Length: 420
Ligand code: HAM
Image (cartoon, rainbow, N blue to C red; front, top):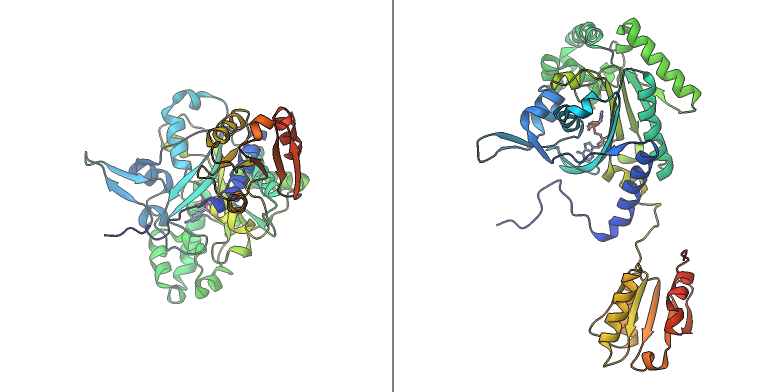
């Protein structure tokens, strides 16, 4: 029997939750600022959604999916990413597909059977957004500007935005031809996986991190030299919008991304602080995916960010904690009811509150109060109610005041620095 968690899967304990909530909360606030609406997509889909959406030849589909049969013999897969599911949902609910524009975001776990390491998990969490509308580079800009806003809100240090265009299918066909013949002429210098990639999906060669393959990449043909007039115009307009809006970027003609649905713009937010896993957010335009899923043609663009990777980037500097407003220290023997009803009315009034039903000495309850990270302690004893007095301790300032019950809520508001 095995009672341990599977490899690459994490428990997230309460000490990591304040940062987690800070990251997801900042993303939610930013999505709202940009008028994106939340969609909750299923954790699993029929396998075809991902095979069709992401592409059979990608690493994700060919090697990394958690796929199983349901009791009816149908093939299901735990979602490895959100875009294919959002597009499936968008097409299945025709009402959305009929709108001129739809702006959707999602937050939740994704599953990929990758080799686990720091920042690379088998169950990981993403937030992401998809903008269905038209083919204007302004929509690419809006998605990139939104990721920029999130990184600014979070204070992500030292990152770069890499931008490229992988053109339309015709551009890519011409490019892949040139790329394949370039790599074929260097086949003996390629790593084993890349020899296979050359046969199945030559653009994936550009992602290889093996030294001999990265060396070859330096002289490989560039997709940007193969773009048609329309794709060149789209790309240069996007770059000039980024220039005029002050969004700093680096052009990377080899940024082709590991999912097959992209057309035109691709981008990645990268940092050196994550070791091998350098991207913390990524995305691009996908103009044909809605049609592939049987929807009315609708160009789209989106991104997704890895929540665990963002947390790793912030864990050394983030100091936020989740504190409980007050901890009731009950020094009497007979008044546990009194303490419990005080807790109930504090909670009803919107204060978070905890107490130790077993009582104990002041010292032991104070220890618990500190362990729970309470901001105030309320000390009551057997005579408190009759004497209409209790003690309010401001833990941070180490100040103690004796107050009457009638001013308890006002005093708490003041200490906790809250508006009435
Ligand atoms: P992706 O590049 O596969 O794109 O993933 C986006 C982000 O998810 C990555 O930059 C990374 O931060 C995080 N991530 C990916 N795999 C892992 C992993 N194994 N462990 C931890 N974090 C990971 C997509 O998923 C596309 N759906 C993005 C998109 C949306 N494109 C258009 N719309």
